Length: 185
Ligand code: FAD
Image (cartoon, rainbow, N blue to C red; front, side, top):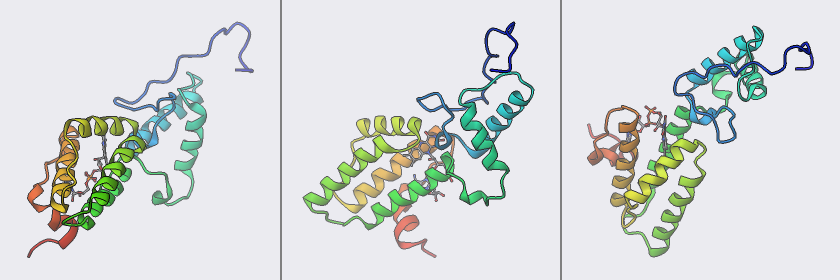
């Protein structure tokens, strides 16, 4: 802005965001709320608009760093997770917790699991995902009476996200085969 001639009073409007692109609550791009493809598209778009002097997108400073990351020689898997990588790892953790949850949990174990899920739903680092998940938990009370209760509840919760994203629904009678025993031959 210091280089602008005095006759140019206001900065150019922000560059357009890719369709469906999610910003963080502070207005900066949310890496863990968007896919890598859409994050890269945004970085590319913003880079071009900065180059052509069209305007600085929201969080342009962050973008410059992000764009730089995509052009270094770092292997892909050394990058911060996008919404998909984060989701896959998180579902792995959650279903594995279900797989290792006791068949007959104590009162303390049930209470710990409920507390964990409540805190998890508030801390999940994709805020749009977290808000939907909190709403789901309010509507469909978490079931912690046994391994099968929790595993099935979690499978249904995962299916609600699958449906929202247009992915196939998983057969919940098979959650233990997928996450605990391995597939029957
Ligand atoms: P994933 O959905 O990550 O599943 C991993 C594996 O789990 C699958 O390969 C399959 O073997 C197994 N599986 C699939 N469904 C079930 C099931 N119902 N029960 C048991 N096992 C199953 N992404 C968004 O874009 N928007 C969101 O709002 C959003 N909300 C999310 C909320 C939460 C709490 C979590 C943990 C993730 C969320 N995600 C969201 C991420 C999304 O669910 C996926 O993880 C991501 O899109 C990658 O999908 P994937 O196809 O690799 O398989």
